[in-house]
Amino acid sequence: MHGVFTDQMNRQVFIAQPLQRIVSLVPSQTELLYDLGLNEEVVGITKFCIHPQQWFRSKTRVGGTKDFSVQKIVGLNPGLVIGNKEENTRQGIEELEKKLPVWMSDVQNLPDALAMIQQIGQLCGKTDTALQISRQIQQRFNQIPKAQGQRVLYLIWRNPFMAAGHNTFIHDMLTRVCGFTNALPHNAGRYPQIDAGLLRELQPQVVMLSSEPYPFKPAHFAEIQEILPHAQVLPVNGEFFSWYGSRLLQAAAYFKELANRLYME
Image (cartoon, helix red, strand yellow):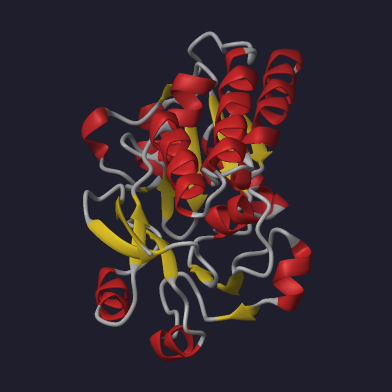
């Protein structure tokens, strides 16, 4: 039995049902598969799929999100590969599509994330669980106290500095969910490079240094503080701002705690 599913890139994917073997190429979606109640069905993950830890230790790793091994994935004989438009390379996905069904997500905001959760639930025969997860996320996010529009710069990289711009999932978490204002202008691009001069020009009230993908150290915090002596500079857990699967269930409590830190300091 086959089903025809439309992914978030509006591509039709023909998938045998029920699914017996799945490869996930996206850490946040790997964790979602676990929280949907799957286990043996997931036969391959990436080296960045660190949640849940028991899967990271026991599942076959097929490489990174951008340098996965097509040969290794094909060798696992999956009935479905789950990827993401931003996190995976177009060339690698197109190579996989020649041999396997590939369902792609395209998540830029909270509604996209909730839709992705429900669609993957449908793919995997876990519709009710996925609906419950997405509803819980929305309910918990509705209870997050909104910031008073503080101008925030969210840094993801150093040398050069790079920040999360508009039209990114991080931006949606900052603005729609937490109530901040992105200090970057709308036309800055998705992940623009920033030098010290532009940092001063933007004059953010808060600078957030993400725990991923760049491992910021205390010296980097001091570096930013020297450039922006009047800004609050603080570390943030990047998983809660950029993982768009079931980790969002935990994000609401983190965002509440973050709001309290900002108001108290």
